[in-house]
Amino acid sequence: MDHLFRQRRISVPKRTSELVALVAVSCTLFLFLHTRDLSTKLRRMQGRLNDDVTAFNHLTDSQYTGLIF
Image (cartoon, rainbow, N blue to C red):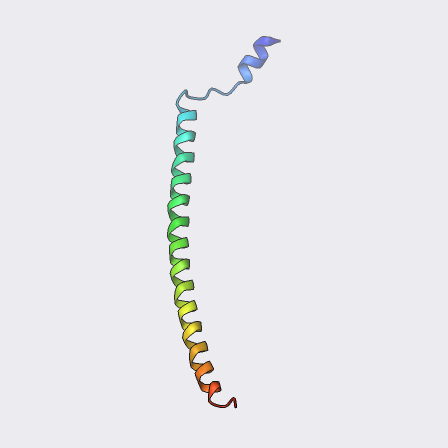
């Protein structure tokens, strides 16, 4: 019976686990770098948007202060 189980086992090269670990580390590093770049771009876009909103609010506030008595 033990002989049957041994025949059904799939032979896996010894370096397969190292290859899987290398691929996992590579994917993690890629995702980390990509996420960091996207986060930086998002912060820049939010900064520009906040500057535009602040400038718009400043313009509209200065227009309406002349109308208030």
